[in-house]
Length: 180
View 1 (tube, rainbow, N blue to C red):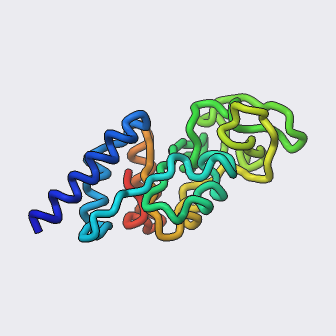
View 2 (view 1 turned 45 degrees about the vertical axis):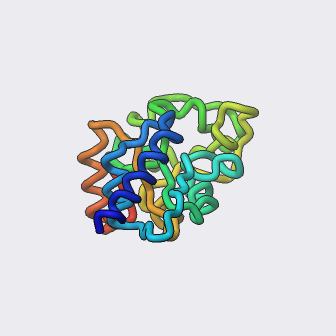
């Protein structure tokens, strides 16, 4: 057992070093790997940051689904004006969202309801390139968890987002699928 724990912590340490630019919470990651992965074969943990954002908009259900073969998918959490938990990286919708005609939209994510946000479309990739509209929409935590398949979701969130996110995780019954 001690040997397996040492392997787990060694794997986690390597992942943290490689992915330090993504500010991974090492205590959350080690807790998940301890409970969720069998390291008897000394395999490497594969983490997809914001899903497969080269093929689909970052944090979208489609990007998460395309990355579901990974062990963990790191996603960003946002809270809407009506307290819905969505997968979104920014405080504003400016970089990633556009209207149905592909025109730029702006505003704070937290000032918009989920219904308002679902009217917008996500831009391709990480939104900062050509800004091309896709058919993808902002995903809720529930949609992201469904799209993840067997992969775990590592939730990147702020202290203000923790309590509502934990409540939503409990309501959805997905505590075994996520790492807050």
